[in-house]
Amino acid sequence: MHRIARRTVFLVGGYERKTADAFFARLKSQAGIFCKTWDVTYEQGPVAKDPDRNAASAEVRSALADTSVATRFVLFDLDDMVTRDNNRPFSIRLWRYILAFADYLVTGTGFRLFAANWRFGGYFLFPAMALAGFFIAGLLVARFVSGFEFAFSQQVGAVLGVAMIYLLGRAFGRRYFVFHLMDLWSFSREFLRGKRPDMDARIDDWATMIANEHAANEADEILLLGHSTGGGIILQVAARAASLIVEQGRGEPAFAVLTLGSTALKFGLHPAATRFRSEVEALSRHGQVRWTDYQALIDIINFYRIDPFARMGLTHVRKGAFPRVLRVRIRQMLDRAYYRQIRHNFFPHPLPVHFRQFAALFPRSLCRVFWRRAV
Image (cartoon, rainbow, N blue to C red; front, side):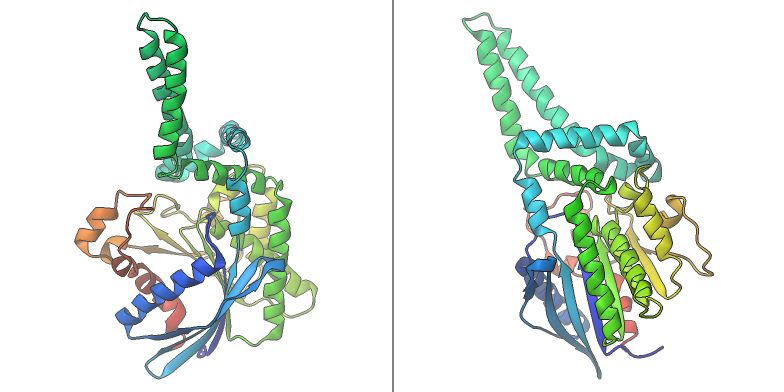
């Protein structure tokens, strides 16, 4: 196994609002905890932004004992897109969510999500159940007040009912990301149906960046990371990058894909996602492309003990697994008291997060990926 001295990492994160500056600040902060835990040194350079391709990067140098690795860390940025979706008028956001929810039900995709992982099915239902709860609470208030026989009781009840819906939305809708998840499921439907040309163009740009990096042949390893929704997007990015490398006569594609807490099946289980599935299947035909999928039982927003490739009904002719599925035991990585505190808290923000304990997630689950070859 050859030693890695120079690595290039490309990351697509989840569908969330996170600027490039905020992301790299968090990366540096968490790396500091990593260094204290594992006796590693870490240096991170300034952030360079490429707004034309919706990317940002930083040069990172890390060392362990007598080995060091220079990493060019590239973030594929979704912040502007998510922000635009979040800033649409609420009526439009609600209508698009209703379309998405109905689409997933009518096509049977929602039921397939439940069959794959019932907890992820609950995650799918959560925004609809929350909205229904707000409406029912408002209706009960309106009916309660209207039951009193005084002048304009029905009008007062209606006003108070609407006020209750609004207050619940303000108090709980934002705290538990109800409205953000509405946008997420709307985006998911539009993306898998090919109705997000902005996202499609972005994937093509990112695939070109990866193909160019591959052609430059300056990195000992190219690693493509995808987290949550990004776990699905990165597969299409990888497939198109591999296709570009072959089309341009640049040899056989050789890079690694790593997905963590991936929700790719919310695309892949939909009958309309034919392009997504065909691109993922095409990716498997490149023998030097490796894919590893990390899963965790406590994380409801992933598909634990599921082979996503096989679950999509896809086949490959490889001798080994594609992907290689590795399960992570969060319970064994955190302090027991802290684990009991967070294990049922699926929406911790904006509650304070104990980064020192949570940082153990990274070194224990990914240390082998980033360091084994370097040591």
